Length: 249
Image (tube, rainbow, N blue to C red; front, side):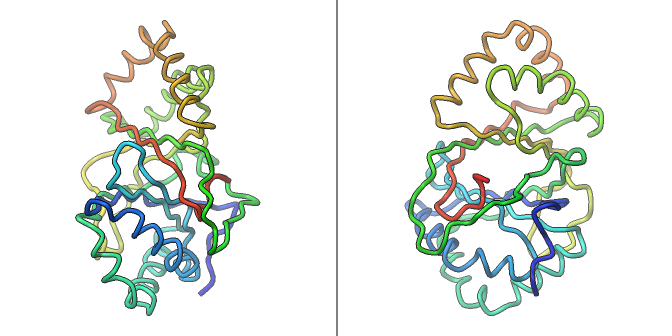
Protein backbone atom coordinates (compact mmCIF):
# COMPACT_ATOMS: atom_id res chain seq x y z
CA UNK A 1 0.00 0.00 0.00
CA UNK A 2 1.42 3.41 -0.90
CA UNK A 3 1.11 6.30 1.47
CA UNK A 4 -2.13 8.25 1.28
CA UNK A 5 -0.51 11.22 3.05
CA UNK A 6 1.11 13.78 0.78
CA UNK A 7 2.92 17.05 1.35
CA UNK A 8 -0.24 19.12 1.18
CA UNK A 9 -2.24 17.09 3.70
CA UNK A 10 0.33 16.40 6.40
CA UNK A 11 -1.38 15.82 8.54
CA UNK A 12 -5.06 15.95 9.50
CA UNK A 13 -4.39 13.35 12.22
CA UNK A 14 -1.11 13.04 14.10
CA UNK A 15 0.42 11.09 16.94
CA UNK A 16 3.00 12.66 19.27
CA UNK A 17 4.71 9.67 20.88
CA UNK A 18 7.16 9.75 23.82
CA UNK A 19 8.87 6.50 24.82
CA UNK A 20 10.70 6.01 28.10
CA UNK A 21 13.67 3.72 27.47
CA UNK A 22 16.01 1.63 29.53
CA UNK A 23 19.17 3.58 30.41
CA UNK A 24 21.60 3.81 27.51
CA UNK A 25 19.21 2.34 24.94
CA UNK A 26 18.13 5.44 23.02
CA UNK A 27 20.82 5.26 20.35
CA UNK A 28 20.07 1.56 19.89
CA UNK A 29 16.39 2.29 19.25
CA UNK A 30 17.13 5.25 16.98
CA UNK A 31 19.46 3.17 14.82
CA UNK A 32 16.85 0.42 14.54
CA UNK A 33 14.01 2.86 13.92
CA UNK A 34 15.81 4.91 11.27
CA UNK A 35 16.91 1.75 9.47
CA UNK A 36 13.78 -0.42 9.64
CA UNK A 37 10.69 1.62 10.60
CA UNK A 38 10.63 4.71 8.39
CA UNK A 39 9.97 3.65 4.80
CA UNK A 40 8.10 0.56 5.96
CA UNK A 41 5.57 2.58 7.96
CA UNK A 42 5.13 5.01 5.09
CA UNK A 43 4.55 2.11 2.71
CA UNK A 44 1.69 1.06 5.00
CA UNK A 45 -0.04 4.41 4.56
CA UNK A 46 1.28 6.92 7.09
CA UNK A 47 3.90 9.66 7.21
CA UNK A 48 6.82 9.52 9.63
CA UNK A 49 7.25 13.24 10.29
CA UNK A 50 10.08 13.42 12.80
CA UNK A 51 12.23 11.48 15.23
CA UNK A 52 13.96 13.26 18.11
CA UNK A 53 16.36 13.01 20.99
CA UNK A 54 15.06 14.88 24.04
CA UNK A 55 17.84 17.14 25.31
CA UNK A 56 16.62 17.10 28.90
CA UNK A 57 15.73 13.41 29.21
CA UNK A 58 18.48 11.14 27.88
CA UNK A 59 16.31 8.04 28.05
CA UNK A 60 13.32 9.42 26.11
CA UNK A 61 12.71 8.97 22.39
CA UNK A 62 10.08 11.27 20.88
CA UNK A 63 8.56 11.00 17.42
CA UNK A 64 5.65 12.12 15.26
CA UNK A 65 3.67 10.33 12.60
CA UNK A 66 0.67 11.48 10.60
CA UNK A 67 -2.36 10.11 8.79
CA UNK A 68 -4.83 11.35 6.20
CA UNK A 69 -7.81 10.68 8.48
CA UNK A 70 -8.96 8.35 11.26
CA UNK A 71 -10.11 5.44 9.01
CA UNK A 72 -6.78 5.43 7.16
CA UNK A 73 -5.01 5.51 10.55
CA UNK A 74 -6.66 2.25 11.55
CA UNK A 75 -5.86 0.67 8.19
CA UNK A 76 -2.24 1.82 8.15
CA UNK A 77 -1.50 0.75 11.71
CA UNK A 78 -3.10 -2.64 11.13
CA UNK A 79 -1.05 -3.13 7.98
CA UNK A 80 2.20 -2.26 9.70
CA UNK A 81 1.76 -3.97 13.07
CA UNK A 82 0.39 -7.13 11.47
CA UNK A 83 3.13 -7.06 8.84
CA UNK A 84 6.47 -8.81 8.49
CA UNK A 85 8.77 -5.90 9.37
CA UNK A 86 7.28 -5.33 12.81
CA UNK A 87 7.18 -9.08 13.42
CA UNK A 88 10.88 -9.32 12.60
CA UNK A 89 12.02 -6.39 14.76
CA UNK A 90 9.44 -5.86 17.51
CA UNK A 91 11.34 -7.86 20.12
CA UNK A 92 14.47 -5.81 19.58
CA UNK A 93 12.49 -2.55 19.67
CA UNK A 94 10.45 -3.48 22.73
CA UNK A 95 13.58 -4.58 24.58
CA UNK A 96 14.77 -0.95 24.61
CA UNK A 97 11.56 0.39 26.18
CA UNK A 98 10.20 0.79 29.68
CA UNK A 99 6.95 2.36 28.44
CA UNK A 100 5.47 3.49 25.14
CA UNK A 101 2.00 4.67 26.13
CA UNK A 102 2.60 8.44 26.44
CA UNK A 103 0.86 9.18 23.17
CA UNK A 104 -1.25 12.17 22.18
CA UNK A 105 -3.66 11.89 19.27
CA UNK A 106 -3.71 15.33 17.66
CA UNK A 107 -5.04 17.39 14.74
CA UNK A 108 -4.23 20.86 13.41
CA UNK A 109 -5.86 23.47 15.65
CA UNK A 110 -7.08 25.34 12.57
CA UNK A 111 -6.82 24.89 8.79
CA UNK A 112 -3.23 25.18 7.66
CA UNK A 113 -1.65 24.94 11.12
CA UNK A 114 -0.13 21.48 10.65
CA UNK A 115 3.43 20.75 9.56
CA UNK A 116 4.30 22.00 6.08
CA UNK A 117 6.50 19.38 4.45
CA UNK A 118 6.23 20.39 0.79
CA UNK A 119 9.56 19.64 -0.84
CA UNK A 120 10.99 17.99 2.26
CA UNK A 121 13.75 15.48 1.59
CA UNK A 122 14.52 12.64 3.96
CA UNK A 123 18.22 11.78 4.30
CA UNK A 124 19.12 8.34 3.00
CA UNK A 125 19.75 5.17 5.01
CA UNK A 126 23.44 5.92 5.45
CA UNK A 127 22.88 9.38 6.95
CA UNK A 128 24.69 10.03 10.23
CA UNK A 129 24.88 13.83 10.37
CA UNK A 130 22.74 15.54 13.02
CA UNK A 131 21.32 18.83 11.78
CA UNK A 132 22.24 21.59 14.29
CA UNK A 133 18.68 22.73 14.90
CA UNK A 134 16.49 22.66 17.99
CA UNK A 135 12.75 22.00 17.90
CA UNK A 136 10.72 22.94 20.95
CA UNK A 137 7.26 21.52 21.61
CA UNK A 138 5.13 23.28 24.20
CA UNK A 139 2.18 21.29 25.53
CA UNK A 140 -0.69 22.89 27.42
CA UNK A 141 -3.43 20.89 29.15
CA UNK A 142 -6.28 23.32 28.66
CA UNK A 143 -9.50 23.72 30.63
CA UNK A 144 -11.46 25.87 28.16
CA UNK A 145 -13.10 24.90 24.83
CA UNK A 146 -10.52 24.26 22.13
CA UNK A 147 -11.77 26.99 19.82
CA UNK A 148 -11.60 29.60 22.55
CA UNK A 149 -8.04 28.67 23.49
CA UNK A 150 -6.92 28.60 19.84
CA UNK A 151 -8.34 32.10 19.40
CA UNK A 152 -6.51 33.27 22.54
CA UNK A 153 -3.28 31.70 21.28
CA UNK A 154 -3.54 33.40 17.88
CA UNK A 155 -4.68 36.79 19.16
CA UNK A 156 -2.71 37.23 22.39
CA UNK A 157 0.14 34.74 22.55
CA UNK A 158 1.46 34.48 19.00
CA UNK A 159 2.46 38.15 18.59
CA UNK A 160 4.51 37.97 21.79
CA UNK A 161 6.07 34.66 20.80
CA UNK A 162 7.02 35.90 17.34
CA UNK A 163 8.48 39.15 18.65
CA UNK A 164 10.67 37.16 21.03
CA UNK A 165 11.94 34.87 18.27
CA UNK A 166 9.63 31.84 18.43
CA UNK A 167 7.41 31.67 15.36
CA UNK A 168 5.14 28.59 15.60
CA UNK A 169 5.69 26.12 12.76
CA UNK A 170 2.77 23.87 13.78
CA UNK A 171 -0.17 24.41 16.12
CA UNK A 172 -2.10 21.29 17.15
CA UNK A 173 -4.82 20.17 19.53
CA UNK A 174 -6.27 16.89 20.77
CA UNK A 175 -8.13 14.87 18.14
CA UNK A 176 -11.42 14.00 19.90
CA UNK A 177 -12.16 10.81 17.96
CA UNK A 178 -12.18 7.48 19.77
CA UNK A 179 -8.89 5.63 19.40
CA UNK A 180 -9.61 3.25 16.52
CA UNK A 181 -6.47 1.16 17.05
CA UNK A 182 -6.79 0.18 20.73
CA UNK A 183 -3.76 -2.12 20.60
CA UNK A 184 -1.79 1.11 20.95
CA UNK A 185 -3.25 3.26 23.77
CA UNK A 186 -3.41 7.06 23.62
CA UNK A 187 -3.91 9.59 26.39
CA UNK A 188 -7.59 10.12 27.12
CA UNK A 189 -9.67 12.40 29.33
CA UNK A 190 -7.63 15.54 28.68
CA UNK A 191 -7.39 18.22 26.05
CA UNK A 192 -3.93 19.21 24.86
CA UNK A 193 -2.89 22.23 22.84
CA UNK A 194 0.59 21.77 21.34
CA UNK A 195 2.75 24.16 19.36
CA UNK A 196 6.15 23.61 17.81
CA UNK A 197 8.88 26.15 17.07
CA UNK A 198 12.25 25.77 15.36
CA UNK A 199 15.45 27.44 16.56
CA UNK A 200 18.94 27.54 15.11
CA UNK A 201 20.37 26.21 18.38
CA UNK A 202 19.92 26.16 22.15
CA UNK A 203 21.37 29.65 22.46
CA UNK A 204 18.67 31.04 20.16
CA UNK A 205 16.01 29.34 22.26
CA UNK A 206 17.50 30.78 25.45
CA UNK A 207 17.40 34.26 23.88
CA UNK A 208 13.71 33.73 23.13
CA UNK A 209 12.99 32.71 26.73
CA UNK A 210 14.86 35.73 28.08
CA UNK A 211 13.06 38.09 25.72
CA UNK A 212 9.68 36.66 26.66
CA UNK A 213 10.42 36.95 30.37
CA UNK A 214 11.48 40.57 29.83
CA UNK A 215 8.22 41.45 28.08
CA UNK A 216 5.88 43.37 30.39
CA UNK A 217 2.93 42.53 28.15
CA UNK A 218 3.72 38.82 28.46
CA UNK A 219 4.28 38.87 32.22
CA UNK A 220 1.37 41.05 33.25
CA UNK A 221 -1.31 40.26 30.69
CA UNK A 222 -0.73 37.23 28.48
CA UNK A 223 0.79 34.84 30.99
CA UNK A 224 -1.78 35.73 33.65
CA UNK A 225 -4.59 34.96 31.20
CA UNK A 226 -2.84 31.75 30.15
CA UNK A 227 -2.63 30.49 33.72
CA UNK A 228 -6.41 30.72 34.04
CA UNK A 229 -6.90 28.40 31.07
CA UNK A 230 -4.51 25.53 31.79
CA UNK A 231 -4.55 22.76 34.39
CA UNK A 232 -0.82 22.77 35.15
CA UNK A 233 2.41 24.37 33.93
CA UNK A 234 3.32 23.78 30.32
CA UNK A 235 5.33 20.71 29.36
CA UNK A 236 8.28 21.87 27.28
CA UNK A 237 10.20 19.41 25.11
CA UNK A 238 13.58 20.48 23.73
CA UNK A 239 14.17 18.16 20.80
CA UNK A 240 17.02 17.47 18.39
CA UNK A 241 16.17 15.58 15.17
CA UNK A 242 17.79 12.26 14.39
CA UNK A 243 19.79 11.92 11.14
CA UNK A 244 16.79 10.58 9.15
CA UNK A 245 14.07 12.86 10.50
CA UNK A 246 11.96 14.51 7.79
CA UNK A 247 11.92 17.64 9.92
CA UNK A 248 13.76 20.00 9.60
CA UNK A 249 11.79 20.62 6.41
